[in-house]
Amino acid sequence: MIFLFFIFIPIIEIVIFITVGSNIGIINTIAIIIITAFVGIYLVRKQGINLLFNAKRNLSQGITPTQEIIGAIFLLISGLLLITPGFFTDFIGFAIFIKPIQSFIRIQARKYFESRRRY
Image 1 (tube, rainbow, N blue to C red):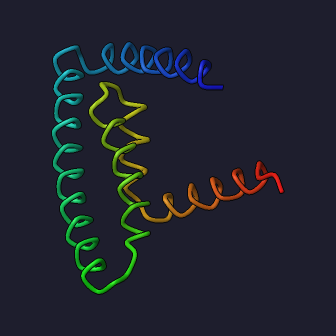
Image 2 (image 1 turned 135 degrees about the vertical axis):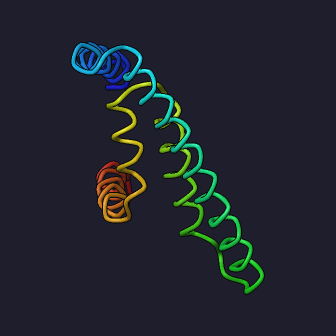
């Protein structure tokens, strides 16, 4: 599964690069990629700081920062996708910032791991 991921994602990115580049030009394509990387870095940093403050507040109140840890995992994945050059990875990275999509992924991951659990 992972092997297919590392094969098909670059192919998808190359096709999108060629399509977008032929429609708007190479310079504009590169500019969009750079801009989305900087916007992604800004969003990851901002969200990361918020997560840290929330986790610190919860810890000071004696609450385990479970939601913050899960949020940090989503933030890490999103950040990695956003700094990776490409339109497809940027789309997925920005989508992971959306709370309903995070909830959907969380539910699907829980179902997956519960189905794999051995008693």
